[in-house]
Structure formats: structure tokens, C-alpha cells
Length: 251
Ligand code: TMP
Ligand code: ASP
Image 1 (spheres, rainbow, N blue to C red):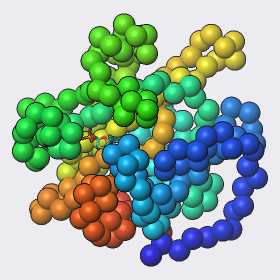
Image 2: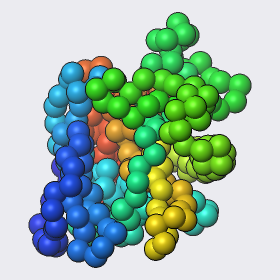
Image 3: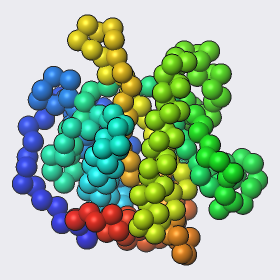
Image 4: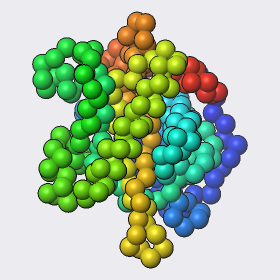
């Protein structure tokens, strides 16, 4: 079980938002936010609720590791630094209201929607979009919806495609190196404005953890992600710990 250290009590500003798995607080410095990672787990748009003990610590440390590695290959991210076991400092962004989903292997909602067996490989990766709206259950939308509803511009969309493919290529390799297949995952992007309030750039935001990706052991296909919780498979705490351990994360 991960041990929790309370050493760094970070002075936090106003609570800005409480989501299903994280709480966001105003950071001390303007333009910064503190992301606090909870152990709360939800599935099926919060119809199912529970706890995965120690998950917040693992997701905080795993997001740190992934964001640092992505920065190294030239992907701009909102990550500034990890503050303690459960908190990290990030840049305040205006979230693009899209869930950007990448699929390398058919699983989850795609398997269900198209009646194709989970685990069927795809000839090439798919990038799909859901509208980020909990009340509507994050409905799948087409690229045309993104543009016509002005959720993102043409230019932003092509940047999102470019960055997302780069991230997928890099992360597939990173996970393959530790005996894990990266089946699918979800990303979120945000806009960070220049001082003039007009110019801006797109950066990767949110988190990367077993909460928002599917990870299968290369040899056995054992699921090492939130699907264990979603589908009552058991062993979710151990699965998250296993991923952390293989990534060399100390808990
Ligand atoms: P899906 O197969 O349920 O559509 O999920 C695709 C990927 O997106 C999977 O890795 C889990 C992740 N995901 C989220 O991070 N948040 C969500 O709300 C949903 C539905 C999926
Ligand atoms: N995160 C979503 C929820 O809370 C969906 C999921 O991950 O399955 O319900």
C-alpha cells in the first residue's frame, strides 16, 4: 500500500472546481492551479462510484512522469511541478471542451458500438472526439461538429491531430518497453493566452493515468487499468501499483 506523506502542506487558494477524480485549487502565483488527486473512482458517467485506495498518489506521480517525458519530446504541457504525494502545480488553461480519444486496439465503447470483439487490432490508430459535457454523457462527435460548433478552429484541430499522433507513438513505445500494450487513452488540451489576452497556444492538460487509458499486459492481456473497477474484475489497487512499479515510480 502506498505510504502517504503529509510533509508538504501547500498553501492553497480558493477551490475552483471539484471533479470526479480531482480537485482544482487556485495556485499561489497567478495563472497557476493546484491539481489534487483523489482516490475516488467513478464509471459510466458516475453511475458507479467507489474508491481505489492509493490511486490519487499513483495518478499524481504517473502524470508527472508522463508529462515530463512528453515535454522532452517537444510536446508543450500544463505541468509545472509535483508538490507532494497528491498535488501538482500546473498552468491555468482554458480547456478545449473535447475529450480526444486515441484507439490502437478495439475496446470499450467502440467494441460495443460496432459489435467487434475487444482486442481486435486496428489497421491504424483512430483519433475520435467526444463533447466534454457530463450532463450529456460526453457524446461522440465528428470532426465537422467540432468545426461547425466552433469548439476548436481548423488550425487547432490540425495541431491536436499532430500532437496526439506524436504522443501516441511515444507512449506506445514507452509502455511496450515495460511489457504493456497501450490499447486506448483520452487526452484534453487547453489554451494558454499571452499577456495581451489575444495570442495563445495549445498545450496538453489534465492527466495521464490508468483512469483514462487502457493498459493490457503484453503476454497475458491482463487489464491493468480502470476497467478492473468499471467491470468489477477486482484487484484494481494492485493493477495501478503494478503499472507504477513497472514505470519505476516509488510510492
Ligand atoms: P471508451 O472505450 O469508454 O470510449 O473509452 C476510451 C478511452 O477513454 C479509455 O481509455 C478510457 C478513456 N475515458 C476517459 O478517460 N474518460 C471517460 O469519461 C471515458 C468514457 C473514457
Ligand atoms: N470518467 C467517467 C465517469 O466517471 C467514465 C469512465 O471513466 O468510465 O463516469
